[in-house]
Image (spheres, rainbow, N blue to C red):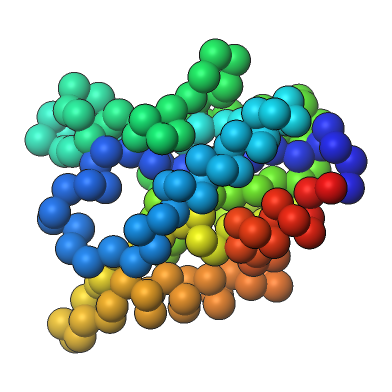
Length: 186
């Protein structure tokens, strides 16, 4: 794999996801794993793109005037790292993410962030559909428990695993942080 042709996308790792309203969450080490990957990316000098969800609704925890909008310190962007804001699930819609990747001649995208079944999944699907060689890091993302249309509850781990299963081999290659660092990046 060409060393200069890959980017790390960190999706919505914001304080809003600390809010109790979300309920039970799996993979409490996701941010630590993202931080490990981020440190490696920075050491290698590869492209890092942070995605930040925003809302126009002042009552939303994602509104820029609310603390929830803030990117968590553990993965806080540093100088020269790209920060894109979005208003929908896909990091490609309403942003210049695709353009950023093309201008930088990126062919491989590694995706991390919150949450697995929503913005991470949607971004991963679009990345694969747009032709990027896409990798999703399973333990560098997390999910919350959800209820379906019949009010049946699914725990966070089930939601996470099913989300990964729907992406695996069709839209992305699923790796763990350890697999990414030890096997994928040499």
